[in-house]
Length: 400
Image (cartoon, rainbow, N blue to C red; front, side, top):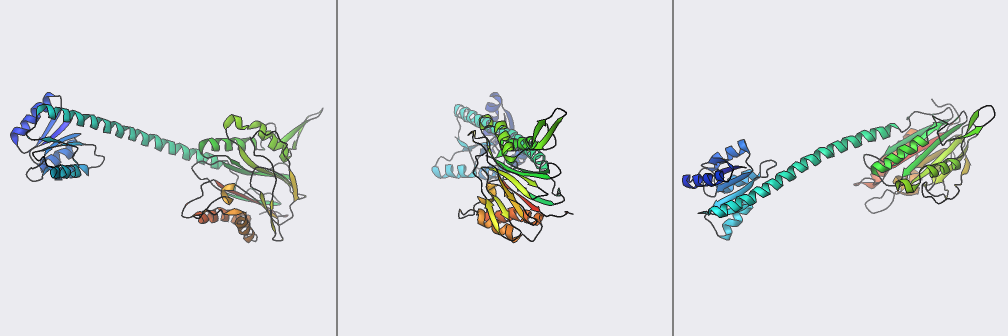
């Protein structure tokens, strides 16, 4: 190990060099504190043995400068003829790790140097482990950010409207990856589907399940999608739009809690864009917020278990007529259960008031107003759960 000796007495300096060299160490020697500091900066020795009283810069000042060096793990032994408590305290406060009394004994010097060597090795090992942890952490953060971008890319287009229906959404995960997922899509010429799902928990496992839900709830491939029911005829197979309760039952079979220890809540709606009839299922999710074109608001409640619980209950769906100008708001419990510094939740009433206030603005403006209002409610903290909101309006006319 490389050791720097800072000692103005030539005989003491040479004795230290002789013993330490015999014990297998590489020795650097300085005659005063200024020279010692220059050599320390150049060679970065892991162990320093310094005298207390030296010309130009004394030992206490040298130690203080060493301790200010970045990422310093240097072990410092102080040579001193002072044995009183006052001087020992001064040395420790300056940053000395141990002391060797003058005149020193060869055996004592050896065991104290060995102790210092062990501590230096431990500190360097910890420093290396911290560097590796930092590298691994940076790599993990990069991977999480990449995964978050992939997850975000699965969310719907902000401008995907139909001729009679307008959609808008907003989403803010509580961490890099979230467990919420939402989407809306054209099922056939007469029907559009929309859903919002909230996976229990947070992080990677919840986000992976949310991606699987997205795949299962994608209408692109009718043969593998839960959104359609196959009907075989003598001539060919045809597909009809599955009822919301049928979709929920299929998801229950596909994602049992026994497989992943996770479950999810879900609202799935099917809107007939010609008649305005909306069928919907709520599986353990917060109630749908309905805003009439007349200005009235109501929460559409439905008592079904979350998906994955395995209760073997029949999911029940409900219907409501959506007239032109009516709006429907789907949201996750991260919205209504967000708490302020006093422990008060944002709540359903505040959400209904906000959405009804924006009834005369675009659905995009309404959707984009919700999460910032929740974040403002939580200040100086931030929401602890994922926040997502999907607003749908039946326009009854072409959407530009």
